Structures are given as structure tokens and as C-alpha cells.
Amino acid sequence: MFLLILASCEKGGTGDAYFNNTDGLYFEGSGDQYNEIEENPFIETSENAISTFSIDADGGSYANVRRFLQQDNQLPVKDAVRTEELINYFELDYPQQPGEAISLNGEISSSPWSEGHRLLRIGVKGKDIPREELGPSNFVFLIDVSGSMGSEDKLEMLKNGFKTLTDELSDDDRIAIVTYAGESGVLLPSTPGSEKSTIKAAISKLGAGGSTAGAAGITTAYEIAEANFIEHGNNRIVIGTDGDFNVGASSQEELTELIEQKRESGVFITVLGVGRGNLQDGMLEQIANKGNGTYEYIDNVEQMRKVFLYDFKKFYTAAKDVKIQVEFSPKVVQAYRLIGYENRVLNTEDFEDDEKDAGEIGINQNITALYEIIPAVNADYALPAITVDCRYKLPDSDSSLPISLQVFDELTPFSQSSGFMKFSAGVASFGMLLRDSEFKGDTSYEKVLQWLQAAQLHDEHGYKAQLQELVQKSNSL
Image (cartoon, rainbow, N blue to C red; front, side, top):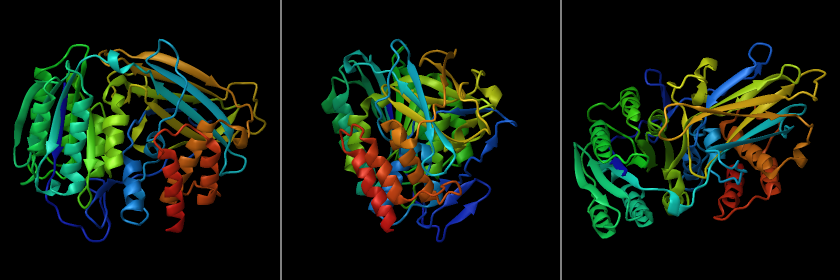
């Protein structure tokens, strides 16, 4: 069952950018809001040889950065750039281990931006399942129809997207539609996927107006999703909104607490952000983070097709609560730094705690994490440089399963590394340039272009080629 939630609210611009220390939000001059990000520092292996984090399957930051560059003709504000989401926007054909819900791979090469440093890439792949074997779904579409959703790049974009998704569903799937403005309402009760004309007619009726009672809509959506719950099926709420909630529980803390309570229901969530001027990016990313879900931003029609059509399988969970724990050998690694994932870092003891929430990975989805490494003096490269441990749960299980991987540093030059490494490093470096990171080393937009072009990866829909255009645009700005 799919639940779609669309939400919006009226809010004016905020003038110059400033920080709100109470809520931890960064306000862009247009009224868009972002959570502040402080980059991960280097950590001495002698002080702490273990690094633990939750995976992040979101791609929202990349599409939003693209909107800044293409539509606004300006560089993005720093905290709109979440480097791991830039990397994980792109499909990478990582190898899969037969019989496993997820698979691991990794490699080490020299760092292309810091002489003498090394770069570790960890790849995670969710298993692929043929479309005809995905099983029934219970979708609830939760759609924001408040006044601020009235523009073409908001509600109309989402309506087209939800119709596209409806066409992809089987007769055994079910769809309900909940709307919210000043209060929530059920536009369409749970309806079989065989009645596509009825579902799309309901979507066509959607219009914007009023304030935004987001919490009420979320509560109603979960009630419908739970009432139509499919055991061992795909139960998911899809929220479409600019996130500017202004009626009832509306702060980031209040809404994430609500979502944390609801995630125990076994219902997953997809959060779709739209529009500009009052986009609550930080809040939407955290709602997805806390609610067993993912966050995507839709900036144009092609992105709408990507989310609803090309990446359709990401609406299905391959594994949940996926945690990565990396142990660095002090005899090989002097210090290390996790690139990105700042709001996904976990404590060491969280790794084996099955009560601790972590990220989800979709069917056939890939996740990448990069560490920059300072090698130990007189390093013993006969030893494994790192051990990667991973714990994950199957979608309908409360107990985690372990897998692990050892990676040796074979002193591979970056120029001889895999296309996966070249591409991921290029995207990561692009993110550090956009953030003007203190860790960007001697990189440049020209070098990023060289690394991306050298990767030579499959690019069915042209997204990797478009990335090169964005790098060139950033250089000109």
C-alpha cells in the first residue's frame, strides 16, 4: 500500500541568510531552510580506530544543487550541499553477492587532491529483484495542497509524478490519497491498482489553498497505511511537500518525534521536496532520516521521471537499519576522515544495538562512502588496512544480520583505480569545492572534470554527462 502525502504552507522570505541556533537551521535569503553541517575532521587511529555510521540513500541534495546552478544561475548555499547525497544520486553497477540482501565492495587508491594521502571507497549494493517478483504494495500518497503549493513546480509537478507512478503499479497494489492544508482529509480510500482511471481522476482534482497542518496529515496517512497493511508486502507513505508546516506540531523536533513513533508500524516513507522560496530542506531530510525512509528533491520534469519511473524500485526496501562500522589498522593508517555523512555518524556501541535506527537501501540501489586516509609511517601493507563490518535487517525483521569485508592497500595510483573510484572521488571533490571545504586540498573544477571523464561508466539517462555540465557551470560562477 502506498500513501502519498502532499503538504505546503505560506511563508515569506527571510531577507539575508542567518542561523537560528534554537532550531539548528540555516535560512537562505529566499526563505529556504537548511540544517547547518560541520564537516567531519581527521581522527587519529591511535585515539579511535573505529568509525561507525548509518548509510544515506537520499539524493535530494544533488537535485537541489542542480536547481541553484541551472535555474538560479548561482552557486548553492554551503549547507545545501550534503556530499554523500551528491554521490548517491547516481546509479553505479556495483557487483552483487548471490543470496544476500546487500553486498559490499571496496578499494583504496592514492588521493587525487592531497599528495601522500590515500582514498578508501566502500560500496554497498541492494539486491535486485525483477519487477514481476516485487510483490503487492500498499501505498498512501500524502499530498500537501496548502496555498504555497499552487505553482507549476510544486503541486502540478507532483500530480504528474503520481500519475506516472500509478501507471507503474500492478492490479494487486493498492493506493490511498490523503491531502492536507488547514486540516487533513482522505481524498481517495485505499483503492486497487486495477482502478487506475479512478486513482488518476482523484489526483487530477487536487488544488492548492490554505495553511499547512502537516502533523495531522502524517497521522492520518499512517492510520490508513496501517489499516491496509500487507504482511510481507511493501507498505509505504509517499509525501509530496515543500515542508513549510505551520499548523499544529510544526517544528523540526516535533515532527521528527512524531515520525520516530510511527516508524515502528512497519510502514516505510518516501519524502519528496518541491519548489523554492520556502523549501524546508533540513526538516524534510530529517523526517526521512528518522522515519525509515529516503528524501528526494524534484527540480524539473526529468527529475520527476527519474524518481517515479527510472528509480521505481527504490520505492521497495531491500534492507533497513543498515549500519557500517570501519576498523582501521594502526599499522597501516595513521588518521582518517569520513567524507560527508555528518548527520549519520553513530557511536561505536550503536552498531550492535538493534534498537538504534539507521538508513534504508532500496531494491537495486547503491550507496557509496569515501574516507580520506593519512597512511602510517612505515606502514605494513601486508596487513589489511581496514575491516568493514555491516549490519542490516530484512524489511520485516527486527533482528540484524552481519556481513564483513577486508580491504588491503595495494598502493594503487588513483589513475589506475576503478571507474567507480574516479567517479565517486570526482563527485566528492565537486561537493567540497561547492562547500569551500578546508579539506579540498589542491583540487579544482578542471581536475574534477578530468576525473569524471576518465571514469567511463554506463550512463543510460545521461545524468553523469549532465554532472560534467554542472561542474563547468560552477567553474564559470
